[in-house]
Image (cartoon, rainbow, N blue to C red; front, side, top):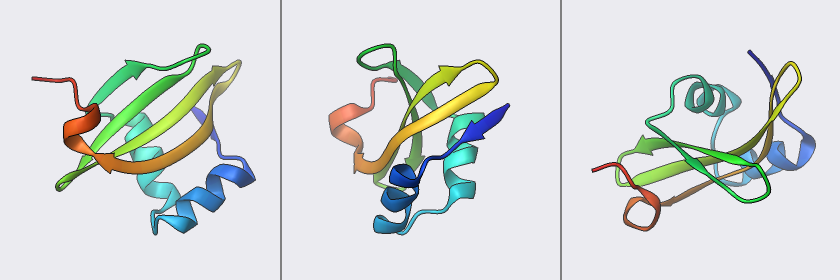
Length: 80
């Protein structure tokens, strides 16, 4: 699967001290996937007390990352 990470998403990765490898890992092996707005999907990956959220769109040859950010698990985690 091809993963496109535009400059804006790269800025967010840097801002939150994440790595592109972590983002790619979350997309390839998410703990949960939920529906987002406007056709977006959100890959969730647990990170200790936090949840990594990777918002992406499916494109012809893979996925395009829209944005990424860590969040409080309690707010977004849906799996029981």
